Image (tube, rainbow, N blue to C red; front, side, top):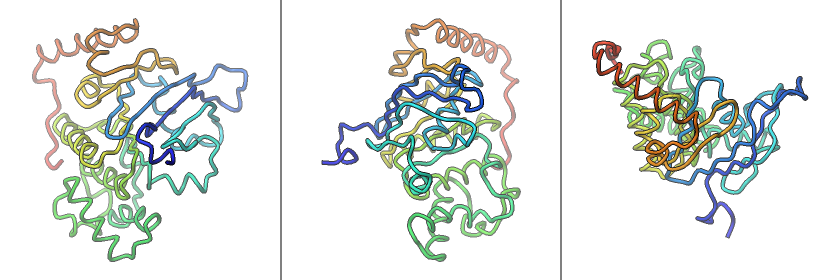
Length: 285
Protein backbone atom coordinates (compact mmCIF):
# COMPACT_ATOMS: atom_id res chain seq x y z
CA UNK A 1 0.00 0.00 0.00
CA UNK A 2 1.37 3.40 -1.00
CA UNK A 3 1.31 6.38 1.35
CA UNK A 4 -1.34 8.04 -0.83
CA UNK A 5 -3.66 5.06 -0.38
CA UNK A 6 -2.98 4.50 3.31
CA UNK A 7 -5.81 6.00 5.39
CA UNK A 8 -3.35 6.52 8.24
CA UNK A 9 -1.28 8.94 6.15
CA UNK A 10 -2.36 12.57 6.72
CA UNK A 11 -3.45 14.54 3.70
CA UNK A 12 -1.06 17.32 4.70
CA UNK A 13 1.79 16.94 7.17
CA UNK A 14 4.04 19.92 7.94
CA UNK A 15 7.10 19.36 10.12
CA UNK A 16 9.46 22.10 11.33
CA UNK A 17 8.68 24.45 8.43
CA UNK A 18 10.85 27.56 8.52
CA UNK A 19 11.01 30.34 5.92
CA UNK A 20 14.07 32.52 5.41
CA UNK A 21 14.84 35.62 3.37
CA UNK A 22 17.78 34.63 1.19
CA UNK A 23 19.30 38.13 1.21
CA UNK A 24 19.39 38.14 5.03
CA UNK A 25 20.80 34.73 5.99
CA UNK A 26 21.69 35.81 9.53
CA UNK A 27 18.26 37.30 10.29
CA UNK A 28 15.71 35.26 12.28
CA UNK A 29 13.41 33.20 10.05
CA UNK A 30 10.15 34.83 9.00
CA UNK A 31 8.34 31.58 9.87
CA UNK A 32 9.86 29.23 12.43
CA UNK A 33 9.32 25.53 13.16
CA UNK A 34 5.69 25.25 12.07
CA UNK A 35 4.08 21.84 12.62
CA UNK A 36 0.58 21.11 11.29
CA UNK A 37 -1.51 18.05 10.42
CA UNK A 38 -4.59 18.06 8.19
CA UNK A 39 -6.68 14.99 7.48
CA UNK A 40 -8.93 14.47 4.46
CA UNK A 41 -12.48 15.61 5.12
CA UNK A 42 -11.42 18.11 7.78
CA UNK A 43 -10.93 21.86 7.94
CA UNK A 44 -7.91 23.23 9.80
CA UNK A 45 -8.02 26.89 10.75
CA UNK A 46 -4.88 29.01 10.85
CA UNK A 47 -5.54 32.20 12.80
CA UNK A 48 -3.44 35.19 13.80
CA UNK A 49 -2.89 38.87 13.13
CA UNK A 50 -1.69 40.24 9.81
CA UNK A 51 2.02 39.56 9.32
CA UNK A 52 2.08 36.55 11.61
CA UNK A 53 3.23 34.20 8.84
CA UNK A 54 -0.07 32.54 7.89
CA UNK A 55 0.01 33.36 4.19
CA UNK A 56 3.75 32.69 3.89
CA UNK A 57 3.20 29.21 5.30
CA UNK A 58 0.45 28.58 2.75
CA UNK A 59 2.61 29.80 -0.11
CA UNK A 60 5.37 27.44 1.01
CA UNK A 61 2.93 24.52 0.79
CA UNK A 62 1.99 25.56 -2.75
CA UNK A 63 5.62 26.13 -3.78
CA UNK A 64 4.92 29.80 -4.49
CA UNK A 65 7.39 31.59 -2.23
CA UNK A 66 9.36 33.07 -5.11
CA UNK A 67 13.09 33.50 -5.57
CA UNK A 68 13.84 35.72 -2.56
CA UNK A 69 12.52 33.31 0.07
CA UNK A 70 13.52 29.75 0.91
CA UNK A 71 11.85 27.08 3.02
CA UNK A 72 13.33 24.32 5.16
CA UNK A 73 11.76 21.45 7.04
CA UNK A 74 9.19 19.14 5.51
CA UNK A 75 5.83 19.58 3.77
CA UNK A 76 4.20 16.32 2.71
CA UNK A 77 0.93 15.76 0.89
CA UNK A 78 -0.22 12.14 0.90
CA UNK A 79 3.29 11.33 2.12
CA UNK A 80 4.97 12.99 -0.87
CA UNK A 81 7.56 15.64 -0.06
CA UNK A 82 6.77 19.01 -1.65
CA UNK A 83 9.74 21.07 -0.47
CA UNK A 84 12.53 20.82 -3.00
CA UNK A 85 10.22 19.38 -5.66
CA UNK A 86 11.00 20.51 -9.20
CA UNK A 87 8.78 23.25 -10.58
CA UNK A 88 7.53 21.01 -13.38
CA UNK A 89 6.29 18.50 -10.80
CA UNK A 90 4.66 21.21 -8.71
CA UNK A 91 2.85 22.51 -11.78
CA UNK A 92 1.28 19.08 -12.18
CA UNK A 93 -0.02 19.27 -8.62
CA UNK A 94 -1.09 22.92 -8.45
CA UNK A 95 -4.62 23.40 -9.76
CA UNK A 96 -4.97 19.63 -9.91
CA UNK A 97 -4.37 17.87 -6.56
CA UNK A 98 -3.94 21.07 -4.54
CA UNK A 99 -5.42 24.51 -5.10
CA UNK A 100 -5.52 27.91 -3.42
CA UNK A 101 -8.14 30.63 -3.11
CA UNK A 102 -6.33 33.93 -2.66
CA UNK A 103 -7.39 36.95 -0.61
CA UNK A 104 -8.24 39.28 -3.47
CA UNK A 105 -10.09 37.67 -6.41
CA UNK A 106 -9.17 40.42 -8.90
CA UNK A 107 -5.48 39.62 -8.41
CA UNK A 108 -6.18 35.95 -9.17
CA UNK A 109 -8.28 36.66 -12.28
CA UNK A 110 -6.79 37.81 -15.58
CA UNK A 111 -8.71 40.90 -16.72
CA UNK A 112 -8.11 40.23 -20.43
CA UNK A 113 -9.48 36.66 -20.50
CA UNK A 114 -13.08 35.61 -20.17
CA UNK A 115 -14.37 33.82 -17.11
CA UNK A 116 -15.07 30.70 -19.15
CA UNK A 117 -11.48 30.55 -20.41
CA UNK A 118 -10.07 30.94 -16.91
CA UNK A 119 -12.26 28.32 -15.23
CA UNK A 120 -11.63 25.92 -18.12
CA UNK A 121 -7.83 26.33 -18.06
CA UNK A 122 -7.13 23.75 -15.28
CA UNK A 123 -9.35 21.26 -17.10
CA UNK A 124 -7.41 21.66 -20.33
CA UNK A 125 -4.05 21.57 -18.60
CA UNK A 126 -4.58 18.68 -16.21
CA UNK A 127 -7.39 16.60 -17.70
CA UNK A 128 -6.81 17.15 -21.43
CA UNK A 129 -10.44 17.95 -22.19
CA UNK A 130 -11.45 19.55 -25.48
CA UNK A 131 -12.87 23.06 -25.65
CA UNK A 132 -16.53 22.02 -25.74
CA UNK A 133 -16.17 19.68 -22.76
CA UNK A 134 -14.15 22.29 -20.85
CA UNK A 135 -16.77 24.97 -21.34
CA UNK A 136 -19.60 22.63 -20.34
CA UNK A 137 -17.73 21.68 -17.19
CA UNK A 138 -16.88 25.33 -16.50
CA UNK A 139 -20.55 26.28 -16.73
CA UNK A 140 -21.49 23.47 -14.34
CA UNK A 141 -18.83 24.60 -11.86
CA UNK A 142 -20.01 28.20 -11.99
CA UNK A 143 -23.59 27.09 -11.42
CA UNK A 144 -22.40 25.01 -8.47
CA UNK A 145 -20.81 28.01 -6.80
CA UNK A 146 -23.89 30.16 -7.32
CA UNK A 147 -23.31 32.10 -10.54
CA UNK A 148 -26.76 32.49 -12.12
CA UNK A 149 -27.14 31.80 -15.87
CA UNK A 150 -23.55 30.57 -15.90
CA UNK A 151 -23.60 29.23 -19.47
CA UNK A 152 -24.65 32.67 -20.71
CA UNK A 153 -21.86 34.42 -18.80
CA UNK A 154 -18.89 32.33 -19.85
CA UNK A 155 -17.87 35.06 -22.30
CA UNK A 156 -18.00 37.82 -19.64
CA UNK A 157 -14.88 39.39 -18.11
CA UNK A 158 -13.95 39.74 -14.41
CA UNK A 159 -14.87 43.44 -14.19
CA UNK A 160 -18.45 42.57 -15.14
CA UNK A 161 -18.99 40.71 -11.85
CA UNK A 162 -19.42 41.89 -8.27
CA UNK A 163 -16.83 41.17 -5.59
CA UNK A 164 -18.83 38.24 -4.22
CA UNK A 165 -19.29 36.79 -7.69
CA UNK A 166 -15.58 37.09 -8.48
CA UNK A 167 -14.75 35.20 -5.30
CA UNK A 168 -17.16 32.45 -6.34
CA UNK A 169 -15.45 32.31 -9.74
CA UNK A 170 -12.03 31.94 -8.10
CA UNK A 171 -13.45 29.09 -6.00
CA UNK A 172 -14.80 27.42 -9.15
CA UNK A 173 -11.32 27.64 -10.71
CA UNK A 174 -9.75 26.10 -7.61
CA UNK A 175 -12.27 23.26 -7.55
CA UNK A 176 -12.20 22.50 -11.29
CA UNK A 177 -10.09 19.36 -11.02
CA UNK A 178 -11.43 18.18 -7.66
CA UNK A 179 -8.32 18.85 -5.54
CA UNK A 180 -7.52 16.84 -2.44
CA UNK A 181 -6.21 19.96 -0.67
CA UNK A 182 -7.79 23.41 -0.78
CA UNK A 183 -6.07 26.39 0.85
CA UNK A 184 -8.43 29.32 1.40
CA UNK A 185 -6.46 32.43 2.37
CA UNK A 186 -8.87 35.01 3.82
CA UNK A 187 -11.44 34.01 1.17
CA UNK A 188 -14.03 36.56 2.28
CA UNK A 189 -11.86 39.65 2.77
CA UNK A 190 -13.69 42.89 1.86
CA UNK A 191 -17.03 41.13 1.35
CA UNK A 192 -20.13 42.04 3.33
CA UNK A 193 -21.32 39.71 6.06
CA UNK A 194 -24.11 38.06 4.04
CA UNK A 195 -21.83 37.18 1.11
CA UNK A 196 -19.13 36.05 3.55
CA UNK A 197 -21.48 33.51 5.08
CA UNK A 198 -22.68 32.28 1.69
CA UNK A 199 -19.13 31.64 0.49
CA UNK A 200 -18.00 30.01 3.74
CA UNK A 201 -21.10 27.79 3.74
CA UNK A 202 -20.28 26.81 0.16
CA UNK A 203 -16.70 25.87 1.05
CA UNK A 204 -17.89 23.91 4.08
CA UNK A 205 -20.41 22.00 1.94
CA UNK A 206 -17.73 21.17 -0.62
CA UNK A 207 -15.38 19.80 2.03
CA UNK A 208 -18.15 17.52 3.29
CA UNK A 209 -19.30 16.44 -0.17
CA UNK A 210 -15.93 15.84 -1.78
CA UNK A 211 -13.91 14.70 1.24
CA UNK A 212 -11.09 17.11 0.55
CA UNK A 213 -9.10 18.82 3.29
CA UNK A 214 -9.18 22.59 3.67
CA UNK A 215 -6.67 24.90 5.31
CA UNK A 216 -8.71 28.00 6.16
CA UNK A 217 -6.59 31.06 6.92
CA UNK A 218 -8.26 33.95 8.71
CA UNK A 219 -7.86 36.61 11.36
CA UNK A 220 -11.62 36.36 12.06
CA UNK A 221 -12.19 34.25 15.16
CA UNK A 222 -15.91 33.90 14.46
CA UNK A 223 -15.14 32.33 11.09
CA UNK A 224 -12.58 29.97 12.61
CA UNK A 225 -14.99 29.00 15.40
CA UNK A 226 -17.86 28.23 13.04
CA UNK A 227 -16.09 26.53 10.14
CA UNK A 228 -13.08 24.54 11.39
CA UNK A 229 -12.50 21.22 13.14
CA UNK A 230 -9.03 22.09 14.42
CA UNK A 231 -7.25 25.41 14.85
CA UNK A 232 -3.66 26.59 15.05
CA UNK A 233 -2.89 30.02 16.49
CA UNK A 234 0.05 31.86 14.92
CA UNK A 235 1.97 34.95 15.98
CA UNK A 236 5.46 36.21 15.20
CA UNK A 237 6.01 33.43 12.66
CA UNK A 238 5.32 30.64 15.17
CA UNK A 239 2.44 28.35 16.11
CA UNK A 240 1.81 29.05 19.79
CA UNK A 241 -1.25 26.86 20.35
CA UNK A 242 -3.29 24.30 18.45
CA UNK A 243 -5.94 21.67 19.02
CA UNK A 244 -9.60 20.94 18.44
CA UNK A 245 -11.33 24.23 17.74
CA UNK A 246 -13.98 23.86 20.44
CA UNK A 247 -11.38 23.01 23.08
CA UNK A 248 -9.04 25.89 22.20
CA UNK A 249 -11.90 28.39 22.18
CA UNK A 250 -13.31 27.08 25.45
CA UNK A 251 -10.02 27.03 27.35
CA UNK A 252 -7.15 28.87 25.59
CA UNK A 253 -3.80 28.11 27.18
CA UNK A 254 -1.36 30.56 25.60
CA UNK A 255 -1.40 34.22 26.61
CA UNK A 256 -1.67 35.35 22.98
CA UNK A 257 -4.67 33.11 22.36
CA UNK A 258 -6.29 34.44 25.52
CA UNK A 259 -5.78 38.00 24.26
CA UNK A 260 -7.39 37.07 20.95
CA UNK A 261 -10.41 35.64 22.74
CA UNK A 262 -10.71 38.74 24.91
CA UNK A 263 -10.59 40.93 21.80
CA UNK A 264 -13.34 38.83 20.25
CA UNK A 265 -15.52 39.26 23.32
CA UNK A 266 -15.01 43.03 23.26
CA UNK A 267 -15.86 43.15 19.55
CA UNK A 268 -19.01 41.08 20.06
CA UNK A 269 -20.09 43.39 22.87
CA UNK A 270 -19.50 46.43 20.65
CA UNK A 271 -21.46 44.87 17.75
CA UNK A 272 -24.39 44.11 20.02
CA UNK A 273 -24.34 47.69 21.30
CA UNK A 274 -24.09 49.11 17.74
CA UNK A 275 -26.28 46.88 15.52
CA UNK A 276 -26.27 49.42 12.71
CA UNK A 277 -22.53 49.24 12.21
CA UNK A 278 -22.61 46.27 9.81
CA UNK A 279 -22.17 46.92 6.11
CA UNK A 280 -25.23 46.62 3.87
CA UNK A 281 -25.31 43.48 1.71
CA UNK A 282 -24.21 43.56 -1.93
CA UNK A 283 -27.05 43.89 -4.40
CA UNK A 284 -25.91 40.84 -6.42
CA UNK A 285 -23.71 38.48 -4.36
